[in-house]
Length: 254
Image (cartoon, rainbow, N blue to C red; front, side):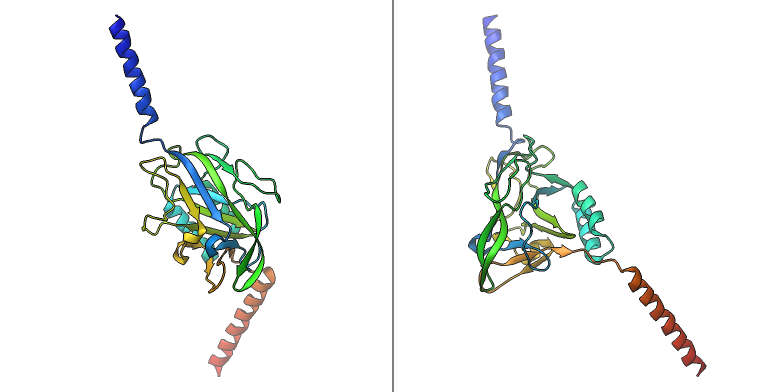
């Protein structure tokens, strides 16, 4: 009887140990660097101005890449407005740093804004030299800790950083296949991930524009929504079409 109980306890302990070491659970820390370090790029508006402190930076993964690509194409073409694009992006995205144990908690420090434990944000201002001119720029840096990659996030998934601000959107990822700097969730260990904007190339800016300067830090500018034509513009366009049609008819009569 004692041997049976002992065997059961040994089996239970072994199963618990295997469960703790299961390859299906990877908890780690994601370090996010977007403060111009190493002359790396920073996010700015489409007019190359500062994004407000306190603006949220979204970190995580899109669950449907085909849907993401469709949203980007529609936004660039002007067939989708800002609010429609934002709704689609939100519904397709899994955030890291949501103040939920499985998704991790953000860790940032700032004397300029109140930082959140659930949302990553632009939280600091630094002096950077951009294209030979030194100025103060709003940036972000910090980490997301205790991330469980199996809870709706998965392993080996591309990670994205994106921001929506003042009818403008920018989306980036780093997955060029080189492996050394790719932003991917771990697949076989407890290692962390570093999402450093300095590792990006222009082709990895999915929405927005990469501005590459010869000196100093570079910029990643958000892309503004294509403005819808105003009523006045439509009236002018309609009048122009009518006038062109009349002129064409008169030319035919001649």
